[in-house]
Image (cartoon, rainbow, N blue to C red; front, side, top):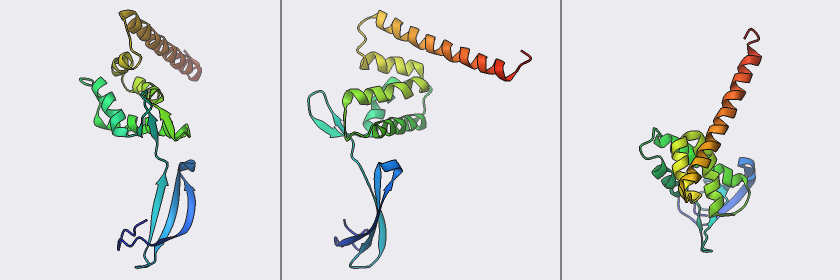
Length: 166
């Protein structure tokens, strides 16, 4: 580890602690040359296992780029996409595996995208799930509508229970 102050490569670890719910290690270091102290955080590098068998580091920007195409023309901001990217990365890190199949990355994108924008979700799902016919779209739309109806029914029930005069 190079010292960020004098660039000396001889540093000593003074203290190590687990950070971020076990997903990272925080180390307090000291430079033997300039004697300044600094902190480093070591985080596990997520690797994506592609269908071809090759692996590459997970990059949030690459995941968001695919979603951005599905959101074209939709009322989805860059901040919304950044939050979605963070949610996907958090979900993948929570799995605790260092190597994640590319298919699982797509699955991690689907649920937050469904909450963000249903039309963008359908666009992304049609490519990701390889819809082959209109029936595939109809089935997915029916699933979305059923989930929406269940959510509305639950909301109405909760409102009734909190307002006994209704």
